Amino acid sequence: MKHVFSVVGLVFAILFVVVFFTGRIDSKQLPSVAPRVGMQPHELDAIVARIPSRTGATVGMARRVVYFLACSGVPTRATMESQALQAADITEKQRLTAKEATSLVLSGTPSQSVPGPLRDC
Image 1 (cartoon, rainbow, N blue to C red):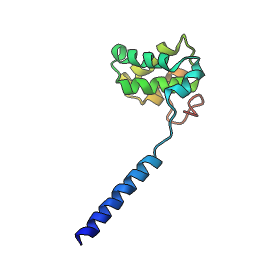
Image 2 (image 1 turned 135 degrees about the horizontal axis):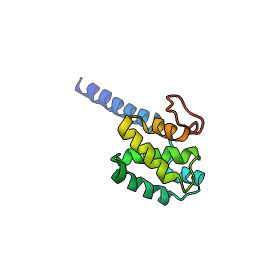
Image 3 (image 1 turned 90 degrees about the vertical axis):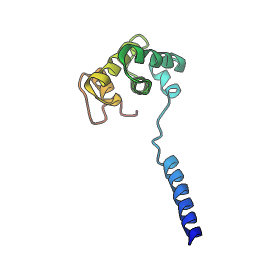
Image 4 (image 1 turned 30 degrees about the vertical axis):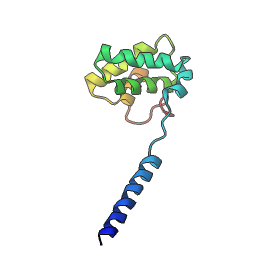
């Protein structure tokens, strides 16, 4: 009986690992979306590093905001950092998600649905 519980526990552990790795959302990384805004991945990483000190947002939130902005392809090299700062600030002050804040910065209205520029993100 003791071995049966060991085998059942092992099966559950393997099942968890399989579901975890196959069920993950396949999201793009900064290097794959950087060309959409005419920037290099290291430039986007530099923006990510500057955002927390200027807005109070976490590094993770800053990374998501920069990812969504770059993925949309709307900002230019010149406007990328200012829009990322604005979106990160909105996430902190209005308690919106990174995607909602990015949508607000890009279109002027927050959207719960998948907005046009963020459709593929």
